[in-house]
Length: 262
Image 1 (tube, rainbow, N blue to C red):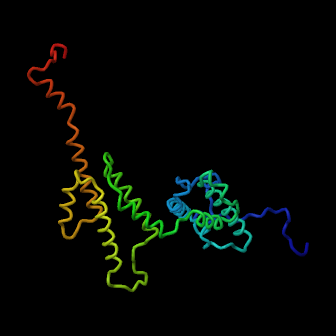
Image 2 (image 1 turned 60 degrees about the vertical axis):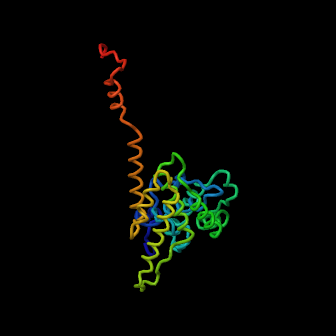
Image 3 (image 1 turned 120 degrees about the vertical axis):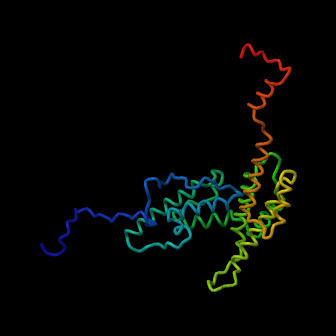
């Protein structure tokens, strides 16, 4: 037969998607997946955004929400692009509090939904920076709070502040004056002071005096480890060995222990 000899009933096989492709969706990537443990509320947009960003980047999908992966023109990629977008829209909605879902439109473009959430819930940087710095200034280690918990809260505040107020760094790639390293060192020293200012002075005041007499000052990580060791020492000395106390009592003169029953 002349002309096109392709059988109309012959099935068309599309190529498989490589797992390294941003269009790839694994068996665990269904629309019911909840890719962030942080649920969007009225006052936690930044924390939730950071969690979602890392999760999407680890799946090679963040380019769909920030618009860097453009809508393709060929049929095969276009179909996959639309499938991924529908999946992402559902993933995003899965991490929104049910009380807020009515405020969010239900489109099929993940980048539009991502931008809408930012416009609704993102706090103006100046206000957020002020609130974070205020919290850092007044935050103290409360009675009964472990050093680990205290440091973890501080680190969370520091990480949030970096998002809104990144430290200075050379971006031209030609600077040889060391401004980047100097900025990092200054930030580390500032956090070191904040760390010691909030610690319980009755427990760690002497360590603070010792560390600030050093030149150069210790790194934040070094200071944290020193305070952590001191906390463990306090815990050990404050809790006497029950076995030793019992043995001492039993062997003390005048004790009322009936040795015949032992």
